[in-house]
Image 1 (tube, one colour):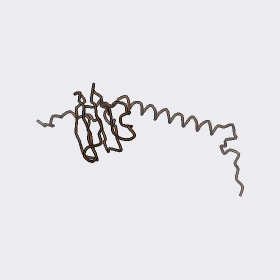
Image 2: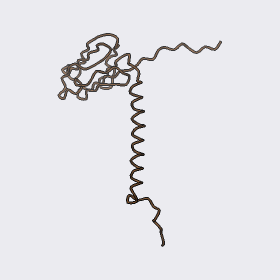
Image 3: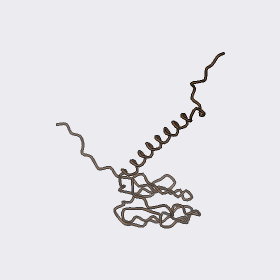
Image 4: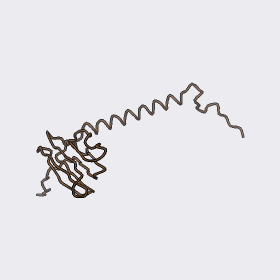
Length: 139
């Protein structure tokens, strides 16, 4: 068997294959970063906060009104998350869960953002309500 490998790209032939790989990966990262930034910057502001406990809706609250909500879960309501909605943003002010990650989360206000408390099985999600559309009428 007589194979000629003289034109096959290798790392040793000046590093051309390696440099091209780096350029390709850098270009892909740039494109993905630009798309991610566009999706992040052009998200809609949310209108309301939906609170679910164990997958069931606990309550829906408007981001336009300042309110404090005590989310009680567990046996006899001994587990608590205090949700604060103020200035169009929602955050967990205090929680009785052992890790307290939900209380350290930054305030949320854009559609799709959420705060999750795994020990209490609480999910707080911002969503944008869709404006009511007029029915299509053919005249």
